[in-house]
Image 1 (cartoon, rainbow, N blue to C red):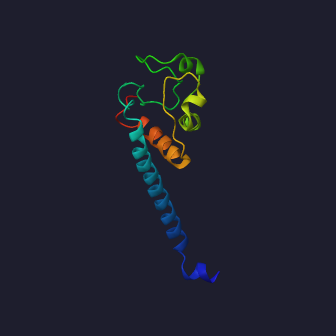
Image 2: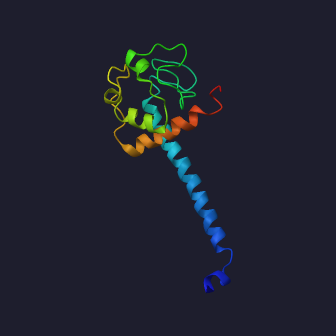
Image 3: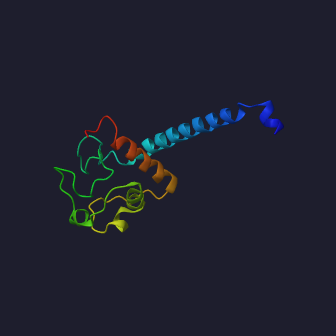
Length: 132
């Protein structure tokens, strides 16, 4: 009780600091994800197809359905809908998650790095560089 009367705005200040810290943590994760995406840029881009399909508007898209890209049969028939969860599972080991995929990438074994990469993919896939 004494603490509340003596410092009435302290709870608000503490809450504000916690919110700011979470925003900074999210940015740090996104920055780490951007670094992790360097593994992807040899084959992927957000705005256009390369060896692999573009990553714009990835979340909610059914695997194997980006226009003007030729996918493996495995990707076409998978009917996977890309979400944080499916991306996390796929990126852990693409060849295990989807046998027959033409994405010959061993995967991102570090779960923190993979989580950061997924958050970066989600954020960038909905950014201004991507058409709706």
